[in-house]
Length: 149
Image (cartoon, rainbow, N blue to C red; front, top):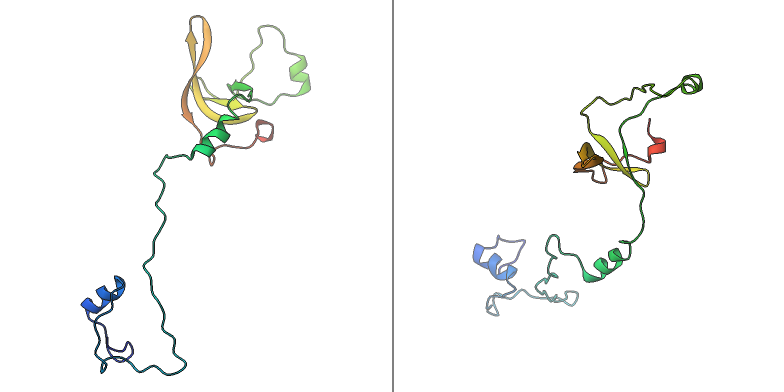
């Protein structure tokens, strides 16, 4: 093979180097090695196979299953408001409290005080229910409800 500093490699020589093949050399083509030069062995790189997207290791599944029976307090928040103590003491049956959300706007679904989803109020056989419209991802989840405005 020709010297790297003297001339460029041909495409065939590049392919042979990439594939780990060494072209046959005549003694005239072999570079002379001095006492300080070492020969370096080059091997092909082998990578571990990638896991398929969505594939979860069995041990991770078992660890997650340990949490399935942990109880969570699930609640829904229609809206918020700020009132003075005087206004709260003046409340009576039939009084209306105006919230910061308008009718038809999504309500927040909370698990242990953290917003995890948004939904809408539904009536099911004379009971209220919540239809989940979206689950928040980790970037969208605000802090605990007590820390929100």
